[in-house]
Length: 248
Image (cartoon, rainbow, N blue to C red; front, side, top):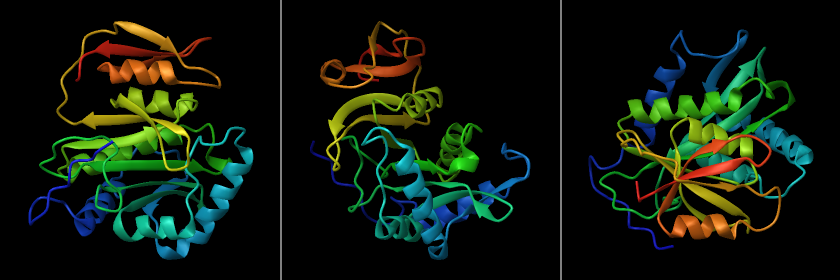
């Protein structure tokens, strides 16, 4: 996939400092929807060893390779330095992390396009045992979206494994749409999702395609290549991804 070069020059990109400043303001809002007894803060370099421990635990619980990208200490440090890493905390203990940054030359957009401003990129959310089954994944999607919206971004992109139905469902419910499917650097397939803050409503769905428990997702790739857009997940025995015709 050829990626359109990102815009350059003053006023084109929000920049690390601005994004962190907006994140600090958003996280300080007293009416933030988080469980009682927890708080949210941004990670520092000193937090990285704790994040690696959470990654190791989460990886040990995962029965399928490729559900999430296992980040190294160096990769996490890159996000602490150049993006934002949100930490849910309870009694001083980090419960997990969720990271994001503005697209740049080292982390280009997942989807090709013409950009007046480099889009925001949502990367992974990894949760430890104390944060499971508390709605943190969907909550951290919405909070990161709020941060980028307040920072003046026009659009966001992310990726998700077709076998990770919980994450896919949460992203679609938050307004993301699937526009593509490709194997990422770890060799595992990911849906390529985008959310535009001023996106128009799309009628439908016009067709549904079951998500496989394992095996090939080539039929989903073919449908996306034909211009269909995945807009919602119909939960049930088959967990069907609902598509709408058109480019969005």
